[in-house]
Length: 361
Ligand code: SF4
Image 1: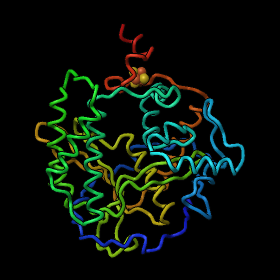
Image 2: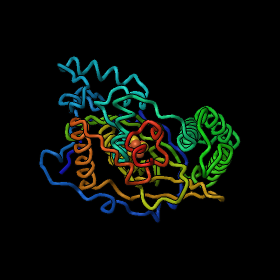
Image 3: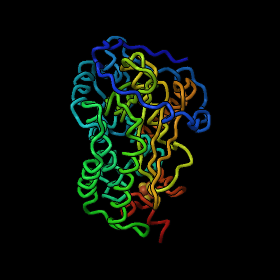
Image 4: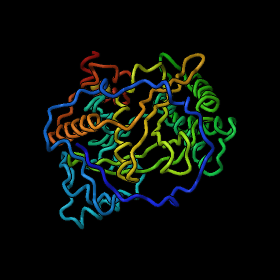
């Protein structure tokens, strides 16, 4: 099925040994796989992950057979591809994906699957989505938790709660500048609920979160489509003395308005992170977990997780989805499918979307 390879890093690359977390943090998980995807047609050529053999972190090999998308430039030679890869590596992950659509990411895949028309606005027309409270809250929450985990990587200790909450407030103020209140929530209410969620994170999630890696960049190619992403956190669970003896749980966190039924399209990100981690370290993940902080009146922690390595069939399904998205992008097919779901309700492109306007005359 899938063959994964890559040079193993030296144990000295990851020397920090952190206190043991409680396994109860992730036991009792909800199983996702097999539920979220039905694999597409089995095409042998669409089931292989392309991994560079000599330099696993070098994306040049991954872009050797790039997907041609819309009007975007294809590297004309291996040297050009390598130059392009070096350029890409220097840019911020989000900006990189927006500026170089040859490389897809988890978030751009999510955007496309949510509504291809939204993807066209963001990645073809390069129109920055206006700020919304939802986006501002997600971004501020991400930064507050990331800062906490980075501190923990260095010191073994979490930041004080007040410091995390201050980070959240500062980021929320910046990110929500220009965002309008919604019928459901004012800016002040969003801020308050986010601050409360940070407290829940600090009490319920942080004590059992022992990061081996935070914001770890990964790159790989699947079915000829280059993917770049950033793993939010690799958690250490079990009886570890190093990367090689501990259990590695790939994690992400979301502050959400209501209890999720499943991982939704975030599952794609997690599968991509798993593939990226395998390529970068030569090691398989031992599980994945999405820590949701649900922003109800009394916020609570709701993890959705899967134990064990990501199954091959899920990786195959991921590859089929990636290939399908790349084909649609190449064909310039961007139907406004957000109209059939709930995506329009919080889409920042509503005011300029002809399909939305036509449907709401
Ligand atoms: S308004 Fe709706 S249909 Fe239009 S781009 Fe946004 S999500 Fe898609």
